[in-house]
Image (cartoon, rainbow, N blue to C red; front, side):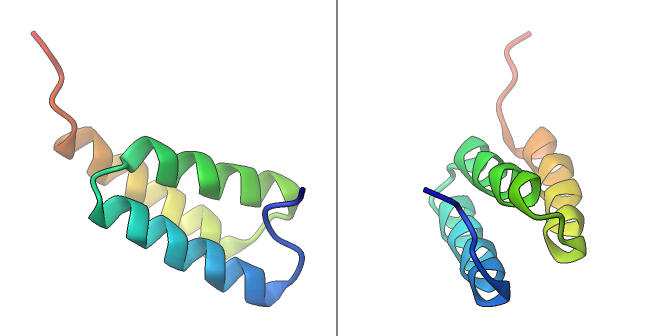
Length: 64
């Protein structure tokens, strides 16, 4: 089943990614937006992916 099927679905994917981030599910949010962007490239999704990856790097506890 496609992640996005229309421009409205892009907004839904972005909203769902925000919900996942709010729950601390950074990897799931990144996977969701990556799949959506692979299905249909979208500048808003790409920009959000860059920001999420940057923020996730600083939020995720990386063991020494």
